Length: 200
Image (tube, rainbow, N blue to C red; front, side):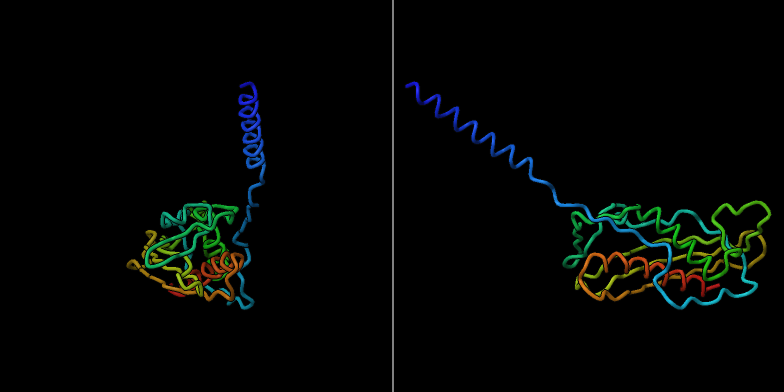
């Protein structure tokens, strides 16, 4: 009769040891990705002389799934799957507006593009507002799709009626790696800036 409690105690200790061993198992490492400041292109067009000055809104509305810090992958007809362990180092809601402003300054001239509100002494002809509708890989895993729309309105200088635009772009993915997917986000933003800059 005395051996049974000892056996139960031994079994409990063994189970506890196994549980602690499971807790001690290291979690998979987190891989971090960033959208680099330099656009991934070798040929940059020269900024046009005498372009109108733009004041660019600091906020770019994004779809809800892009407000997460985890990279996403499309599945099926309507599904999205978080890529566990693969995260953005900077939230897209911060990096997207910053990089669009940076790219537009390259394309139009650094003195022609200012974040709102423009500094004292700068008279902007138009105000730009951009909304990102989609920025996600297609379910086939072969390309990244960006959809956006924007509006250029007169900033009170008589520049003319509002100008609206839209873009539906695809960036091919050379392979199925997460690094390639992250880098495609940066190229897609550059292509968007090109479309916006061309519409003035």
